[in-house]
Length: 277
Image (cartoon, rainbow, N blue to C red; front, top):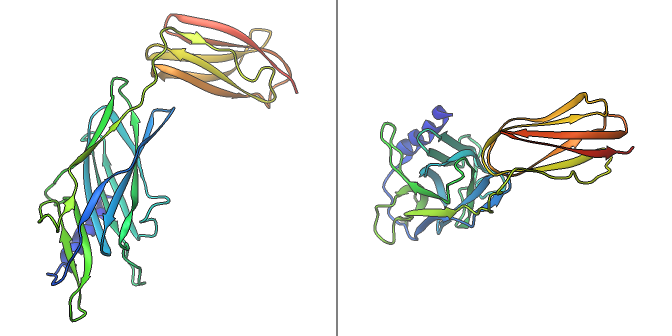
């Protein structure tokens, strides 16, 4: 992946020549983030360009307490690009995104002027004390990466050239971006351990079992038959504090009465449920 990302830098260096005509500003930022119940935050990265974009180099640094699980280009303005690279380094809390429409001999259009999402950052919140995530651009050397947009422009004689735009240019010839902060929406943590009644009950063939953890714990959730034999283990791992749920698929089990038991730290509780085929 790193080798492919270096291709972007090399191509820009080879192709770059001075431009005679360029107009329009560039903006880079984020749309409204969304958060799902599994501690994932999706942050859409939005680019606004008033001329055709030939390439983008987007190195970003994010705050601690989160893991960048993925950079997705699905359903974005750049989904058709030949090169879409995201080099993620969670130890350094950085990601380098490289975007280039064309690497092949087949002619492809640049990113047309407009505004919209070019990538989605998908973070997982690891620290329950995190209340916000900050993302900012940064610069690296060897190889050099900075927030750079490369534009195709045409002079009065019709000559097609390239021009780079960075954060350091004049007010009408730079990328308008500093940093952005996303708030982490949190619901109140449970105040006590609890095992909830499964739903639906009776069920056929799946049911959902919910439980509450006031603090991070090693959790084991098991299913037993009426003879007290363990027939399934749904969870056996360390889990973060919060309201959790897991589905049990009993399609391979016989109809009848079953028990489910949770062990979390010093807490344990057993409830019963009925599967009817």
